Length: 130
Image 1 (cartoon, rainbow, N blue to C red):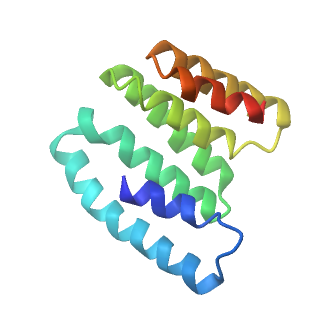
Image 2 (image 1 turned 30 degrees about the horizontal axis):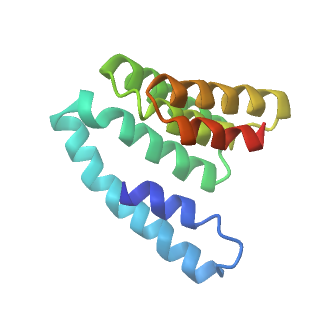
Image 3 (image 1 turned 135 degrees about the vertical axis):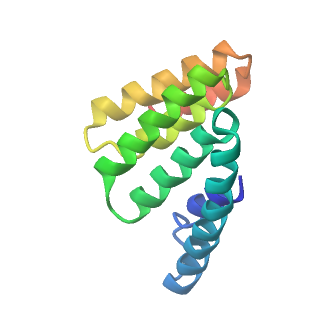
């Protein structure tokens, strides 16, 4: 998703504020299209919508709102059978945790979820953050 990539780019330390603002604008514009898709096909796009909303909330410094949105994304992805999106939402949620133990728990859950759907390389990646 373009919106998630734009949100991730906002975290790059080499970007100035103008570049970050441009990426946030891209994410927000993509969010509008994603909202429409989620209205038409909530099982297919609802969890993506909540992930982007969560990332935008995190970027705005609203970590609690971000965590709520990402938890909803996790549950929606699980309910919809989008098992490859469950670890992504958990990784994003880990970045919102102020408590290091909670963050480690999220990273472990992401690693386990990646292994469950066969992403063996990806299942080893989050372990560097635990």
